[in-house]
Length: 265
Ligand SMILES: [Ca+2]
Image (cartoon, rainbow, N blue to C red; front, side, top):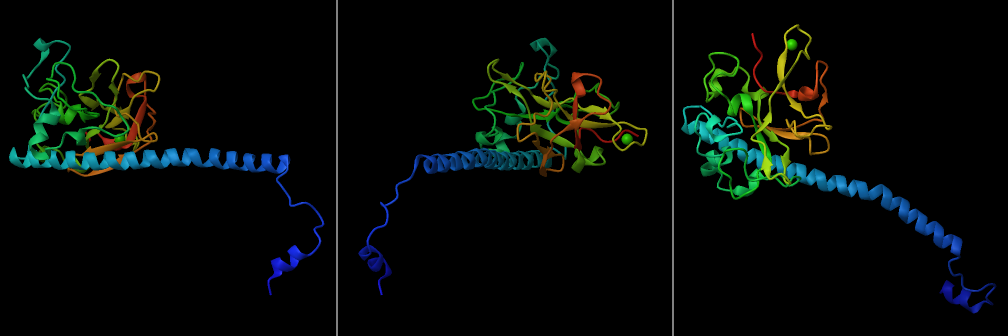
């Protein structure tokens, strides 16, 4: 039996109901609340996807560096900061670090993090035709012969370090698009005794947000950054924590899981 037909056949007790103003406002309010809850989630999901794409970029960069080292007796390239003038450019490198490994990667897009605009070079290195938003570990890949510890040559061979898997070599770095330059490095390294054994270890640090041009690792992925380690593996790290021994803007925040150099004996 058709129930609706029976109803329709009965005498209507009231008009077919339209929405009242109050009902309409309640529905709109509920939709607004749901939107307010969901939109940040959508934004987070988008950033999460970018973070994963960035990690994939770095995986290829890490593999490129490993292949480079296989061809050069286990030794990494070395691209020190060339200084403010070309005369300080020692040694006289001809290529930016991305170009050093380009023969192994053959893809310019992997040097650009999707969460950053990137820049095309820095200081006195020749600029490139693509964006770069990653910087290198100055101690390992941008080393001067006189950098501590003593008697460690530049370029650095992986075999000279005890714990390459703990040492970050490439990470997200700050780039100033408006100024038109990026940073060759992503870390000076800052000292802290996080294991409280009385000896300081050198960790990767993040810039003080108040002075972003002191640009170490740049935490652009929900407060963290992606890192390539000296054995070629990649990992997300962060967010950074306040460095207990920070004395200024140089070493304000610290990535506890990313070392810049091996523990000094
Ligand atoms: Ca220690």
